[in-house]
Amino acid sequence: MKIQAISTNTNFKGLFTDKTAQNGGNWKMEYQPYSWEKNKNDEIGKMANKARFDIYDSKLPDNEEIFTELEPSYKERSADILGTNSYYKTYDNRMRRTITELPAMNREESLKVVDRKLDKFLMNKHVLRRQLEYDFDKYNNGVLTASSDYDSWSKEHEKGIFERSYNKSESRYYMDQKKSDLLTNSEKMYDNSQKYIRLMGSIDAVREAKENGRKEIEKLQELRKADKLIDISSRTVDNPNAPLEAALQNIKAAAEKYICLPNKLLSMKEVLKMVNPRYIEGGYNKEIIQHVENLIKITV
Image 1: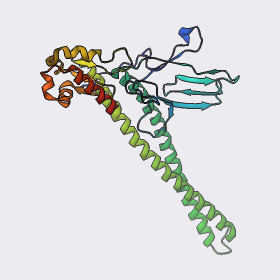
Image 2: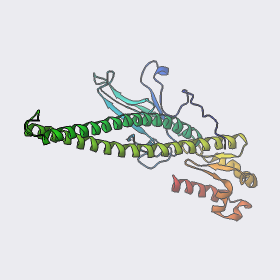
Image 3: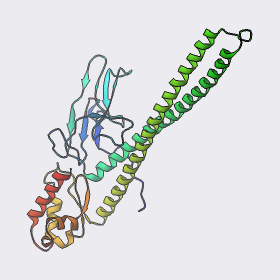
C-alpha cells in the first residue's frame, strides 16, 4: 500500500492546544484526549494523568510530560513533547494550570497527533544517537591513549637505574593512573554501547509504530471516502453509537463496512460473527450494539 504524506498542519487541534492568543492574552489551554485515552477512573476518552517518559522508551505515554525548572522565563513548567505548556509557574510564583477538557478526538485524528509526536520523538532520539556515537569515539580514543601511555610508563619502570628519567615509584604511580584511565574509559564505552543498543531498538520500534499508524490513517481515509466506515471511536460525544445505529438499519450493507473503535479498526463481518452469524440476517440491533460496547470495554 502506498503511504500518502500525512498533513502536519500546525493549526490541527489535538491534545493540548494553546488558545491564549485568542483569549486576549489571558491563559487558556484546551485538552482533547485521544480516542483510547483513559483517566484515573478508567473512563474512555478522558484525560489521563501526566506521565514522564524516558528517551529510550519505545512509546510515549498518552499524556506525556517534560518537566523543567529554573528556565529564563519560568520557575517551573510542564510541556508535552511538541512544546505546548500544560502549566507553568513564573518567578513571582504566578501559576497557570487551568485546563478545559474537550470531547475526545476520533481515532483518525488521534493517530495524526501520535504521528506528529513520534516525528519529534524520533528527532530527539537521533540527536541522542549522534551524541552517543561521539562519546563512543571519545571513550575509545581514551582507551587507546591510556593503553599506549601505560605501555610507555611500563617500559620506563623496567629500565635500569641509569637509564630511567623517573624513579620506580613515580613510574609506578603513572602506570596506576593510566590503568585507572583505561578502566574508566572501558567502563564508559561499555555503558555507552548498552545505551546505544537500547536506543537503536527503541528507534526501530517507534518507526514501526509510526509506519503502522500512517497505514491505518490512510485506510481510514479511504474507507471514509468510499462510505464504508462506521466511526464510533469518539465515545465522549452525544450518542456515540449513532453511526452504528444508522448503519444497522441496513444490515447487509453494514456487513460490507468497517467499524472504527477507539483503539482499533475491525470489519463489520468480523464483529457480526463474534455476536452470532444469524444476526447478519436478523434484526438484533440492540444485541449487536451491546456486544460492540462490551468489546470496547474489554479491549481499550
